[in-house]
Amino acid sequence: MKLRRLLPLLIRMKPITIGIIVCLTACSTPAQQTTLEKETTATNDKKDVEPSNSYSKVSQVRNLKTSPDRLSLAIDGQSDLFYYDPKDKSTPDNGSTVIVTNQGKRYKRLLEGPINAQYHFAAKGDGVTDDTKSLQAAINAACKANNPAAKKGSSPANGSNTVYIPHGSYKITNEILIQGSCTILMEQASSYGGTRIQQMASGKHLFHIVKDNDGSSSGVHIIGGILKGSASTTSAEVALIFGGEGALNANNNSTYIDNVWFQTPEQYGINFLRGDDINIRNCTFDVSAYHSIKMGSSSNAVTNSSIVGCTFYDIRAGAIDLINVDGLIVNTNRVYNNAQRYTPYFLNANGKSVKGLQISNNYLDYVNRLVFVNHNAEDVLISNNMHRHGSGRSIEIGGGQSVSTIYITNNVLSGDYSKEVNLGGANVPDSPIFCYSTGLANSRITGNTFRHIGKGKGLTPMLLTDKRTINNFVYDNMIIGFDNEGQIANPTLNRTK
Image (cartoon, rainbow, N blue to C red; front, top):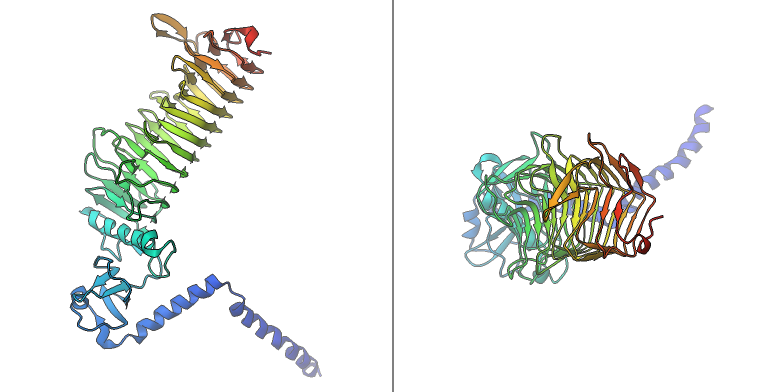
């Protein structure tokens, strides 16, 4: 009786079960289906290659007299599928992903994922071998897979424009040129692991973004790893990641640098002389005798870019130099050192032109200056930063002329402000807001906390004594440890309450 009652229920459940199975296949997205089809096709193709078209040496393929549609070639003991591309008449032989026969036929390796610098191009990563040629070849292959001129603006189905550089220590002795759009993926570094690349040659960049043969280059993405210099002396403009401005250099647009650890650069960790949409995120700049980042040049600007979520530790010559920028966000970074060795500055904006600069929500400890801006700056917002254990000027506005539209709001500036600095034979209070012999107009200093924590008396929280200081809002600031609210010229021409 019980079995008879269960049978109708089991019968009714059967279509539901079948429907679930059908849906798992039919309801998958086109991308998922394509990936599955590629993997299945690649596996089946390897099985379908005729034994007579299976080779163990690259030289055997180069000497082919016939042109099979596909063949199997073992490189470094791993057998991979290669297919004949009759439309390609120009891609050079690189001995790994493209093999060219003596008759000019091009066989291309079927890549089912990123290009692997070790597996596909024989990089060793053993800390001894010079891996320059292997890494360069891997990146060249990735850039060519997505070349806009050759591919007419579309990404091809074959190949990969991502290079994976596995865990290891890679020594290089020349610049690695990035000639086109690609992604370089390295294993996330720790104190004793990850992907490590060290430039052994003095005066050489590590990664250098250069112009592609389409006339420009955009869309480079560098992720993870440790990049390191080795020279004991500085070389002007040399960087671990460099984007220049000359005829052979790229436009550097849409360059993204994420989670990279920079160590001991000769001058800069990152140096871009021009570019738009350059974003540096969650990187670490660690123990450097020189600098971390430089943006812009006297001729070109870096525009619409950001430096976000980075850590700067023990940067002994100053962290960031801004020469020519327009539209830069510097947000939620951490800059710190110790009482025995202060970092000179976080941001030096004493360049040709600094416009649309937002400095917000950064944390500084044992850093002398938060920022220096000169008379070529405008529309600069300095807001919600915490500067602890400062020593003298935290925000300095200089240049000797009049500066306009500087907005300093809701910052906490805490340090020793009991000292004076000698300028032109005059002793001047080294105050948190320091604007000496420079006018300030149409600006705002509101909602800040100025806290003196030194042993001596805090001299003044704000030095705004130039007669060109007019039409500013200076009020609602909290003053701790000072016996005045600031030295401000033209009180009737500025709103101070």
